[in-house]
Image (cartoon, rainbow, N blue to C red; front, side, top):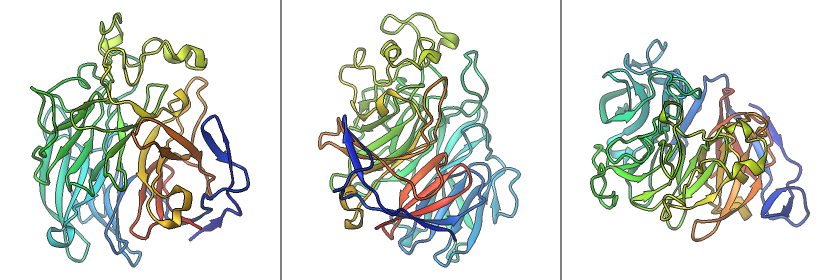
Amino acid sequence: MRLTKLASCMLFVGAGIAVAGGANAAAPTLASTTVLTKLNNPWDMAFLPDGTMFFTEKCHGLSVRTAEGKVNRLLGMKDSKDYGTTAGDLFCEGQAGMNGVAVDPDFAKNRFIYVYSASDMAQPKTNRVMRFVVSEDLTKVSDRKDIVTDIPYKAAASDHPFGGPGAHNGGRVRFSPGDGFLYVTTGDTHNHEVPQSPTRIGGKVLRIDREGNAAPGNNAPKGFDPRIYTYGHRNPQGITFRPGTNQPFTAENGPWHTDEVTALKPGGNAGWDPRANVNGRGDCPDNYCGYSPNQMAAVDPKERSKFMPMTDLKTYPKAMKPAWTNEGLSQGMSSGTFLSGKQWKEWDGRMVVSYMGIGIHGTPVGNRLDVLDISANGESAKRTKVSLPMPAGRFRSVVQGPDGNLYVATDEGEIYKLTPN
């Protein structure tokens, strides 16, 4: 394994942003250990208390790294090899494939694990949340039950020039440590009607029980699918829960501007509405105004104020306000987790967000991790840019393990452990 250390980590603070530099910082220094390498687009991770780590590879499937360090391949997708079980309906395309994974809070009793994946079992294709039973020896899964079968999937390129099949696919699944229910993030699939639709569950955060039923207290508006917890999302790929309050926060991709971190409220609207002819908008390619106007002009920050906002407070004045907007940039925000424990020093209780580093038409590339100090009301944040002790990559997932360390997956095929000192 590879181990590197940062000699120091200091902070400069200016304009509400903290970055590497300064003298009296209480932020931790970080050491990096390579846990796994040569993976195929590792997408997500979930842990057992003893350090056993389940992880997904977007185009391969679900595997587990035991506490002793052995890797067992559990659930393969279509055409995957060397897996204990293969599901012929699961496939990989674009952003879609084997995405999120979550361990049941009662795993010691029921041995349930949950995954989010694209499936062609029915037509049109959909995304599904599936539950499996993991064997005692951690070598296979069985007893598949599809608890959500109707999450939209983008099956073909539309008439607008942005994104191919599998785009805006969402895909994170997390159990809340507070209420014990499963939260599922879904993308808008480049469909103009989906985010604000009361019945189509793309562009949403779902809150369900382990059977896929609506959890009590979702407060979905009248006429909405009762599984909906929040709506009006674009492509939330991260969800995490604030220590102490257990309030959920999403990390969401922006439309070439404004990645957002948002504190969720039951029944809340995130304010994304790409439909044509809304709020004075005209027609758009394929009726999807998510890149309106021509956002190739996004190089000039002064021009960004003309763009359709991620959170449209003019059209939806009661929409949930984001805590962090990435300074009006979209750089592929992909995941988030709150840090907890005295070992994190100043960062204890703060949120880490990851970026895939998208940089389009002059937008600066951002392959990095940020630490956000989010206000108590969840409507503002100050940022620290993390000085990385390992090579920067397209950061796909961040999860705090049971050992208190931060585990980071990259599209380049590595899973790292970041240890604070």
